[in-house]
Image (cartoon, rainbow over all chains, first blue to last red; front, side):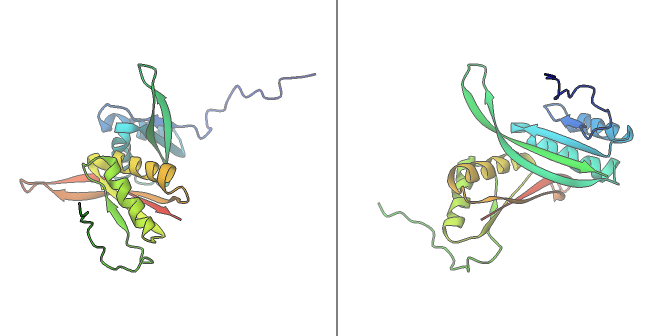
Length: 103
Length: 103
C-alpha cells in the first residue's frame, strides 16, 4: 500500500511561519528581523522567547509596532512552560512566551 | 510564635481588583500572593510587571496555575509601553505586561 500519505515537504513560503526567536542580543536586532519579515510581505510575525529573554520579546513587539510597523497589532499572546535539559543532564522548567503581530 | 499575618481589608471578593505587582523578589513570593487571593475567594487575579521583571511575571503565572491553582487558566494577556521618569528627571519607555488568571 502507498505509505506516503503524510508527505509534508515542499512548504509554500507564504505560509504563516514567520518566527523571530529572541535571544540575548540587543532588542533592536530582533526588531529589525520583525520589520524585515513584514516588508517581505508577511501578514503576521510570531515573536518567541523563553526564560530571561521574555522581557526583551515584549520590548521587541512594542518597539516594532509603535515605531516601525504601525499598521500591525498584537494578535495573540500565549505563555507556556517548557522543559529544558541543562548541560549537566538535569532538567528544569522554563517559562516561554509567544507574541503574534499581525496586519 | 504568633504569626502576624496582615489582616485583610475586608474587600468584597467579587471585585475585579485583585492585582499582584511583580518586583524583584523571588517568584514564589508572588505565587503565594496569587494563591492567597484565590483562596480568599477571588475569581480572577491580575499579575502585572514591567521592564526586567516581565519574565518573572510569566514564571509566576505558570507556577501558580500548573502547581497551585490548577482550576484557573490564563484569561487574557496584554502588553503595553509605559513612560517612566528616571531619578535624574529624564524619561524613558518601559514595556509592561498584564496577565489575568481566572477560574
